View 1: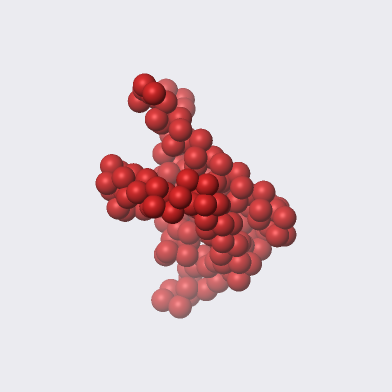
View 2: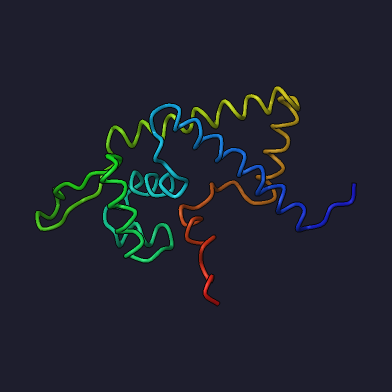
Length: 157
């Protein structure tokens, strides 16, 4: 089969989409019917130290205003809370709540189950080889949190 570069990009995107769609559907069935992919990026960034709208914006490569809107939605839905910063009483600090971590962990379990089904479908060795080859091509580092902002940037140009 003779595929092009765009074909490869679309296959990789389709694989990502299958995983994300299944996670969103599965999370809804488990009681997290209001979690979206951008929320996962934001929750992970906050869990990894983005404690303010400015820091979240930088982590996700989005504006401070977009980060503030995302934070407001996550707070309203109970996934994030804002509490006093022990280092500076004038400052509020973002934290992922138990509900937020529950959504993250359940999403991870759904993705792990999909990976197991793919391994059964094409074989464990072939899936591991595919993962090894992709890691060799793109590098071992995980996708950065700013992927959501990267995908949306430059839309006005």
